[in-house]
Image 1: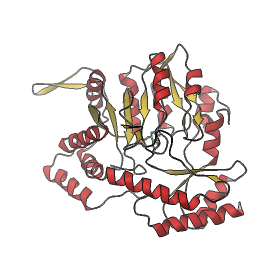
Image 2 (image 1 turned 90 degrees about the horizontal axis):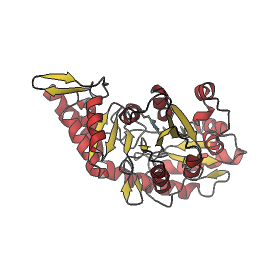
Image 3 (image 1 turned 45 degrees about the vertical axis):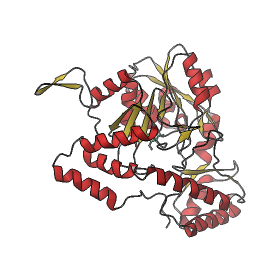
Image 4 (image 1 turned 90 degrees about the vertical axis):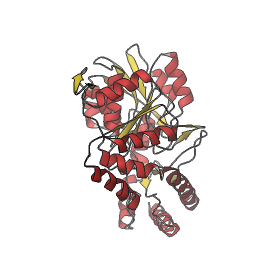
Length: 368
Ligand SMILES: Cc1ncc(COP(=O)(O)O)c(C=O)c1O
């Protein structure tokens, strides 16, 4: 069986972890700071704060913007539910926005249509390692004085023209879940250039406490959203591989696309006009008349693990029950939810593996 994804770890992660274990200091500490610095330097931003996950990063990003009950936050509909769940957790309303089917990222015109006097922030999502189209997003947000939080969960190392994701808007949130290009097992990061927001993120990440001499003084009711130094150590080793991983994934994606280009009934992912796709996931779109779930089953029978792209939030029972969305109402997102397939693409795969994936998909599609 060719697995969907395998994290790229080796003795370098073990070496970094053993340095932490030998200090006996395992909570957030110097390795986490080193990891944060590597991320800040890579993407070129001023501040980076390691977090326990991208979900907690997104939650804290909304907290420091003072999002409250009654507020509306625009969220790309085609995403992992965490992006909108954190809005709900603050008692605010996620307003779901359609996507563009070519890039699978938020449609700026639909975003504009959904702004109301209660809108307080926008969360575009970088899809599968492809940046959303930030020029129009940021222009529309600026017209309405709205902060933009990038859900860059899949986009560490992704560029939008010549700038890195996570350094394009008010704040960026990364994930280091094992399905991502680099991983710490679980983990996340918030990046920003805003000193005021940075100060509050730092305070609220760790209980709201400020050290005053020997003790802490608790200025706010904060969280424990810290990353352990053991995981920070994995992050340090992984960050040192990032440039290579991005290059390798881009080259492999081209190689796979060449093999898939003649297969009927599918649309392969393409580089957007702003470039920089890192193919965190390699996601194809099958034609409307194809039974996607059957393709996934047949691929499995052929020894290839695949899965759906991600979810249309308006098609999920919670969002229908709480906010009255109807199945299929957000048209492009619904199409992406029902028609996308993620194929395996990670550095350990050989050219021969890519041949097998392409051959198996061709056989399955010809029967479909
Ligand atoms: C777009 C997106 N946002 C948020 C998350 C949540 O990330 P985490 O698992 O680090 O909390 C994910 C995870 O898959 C994601 O893909």
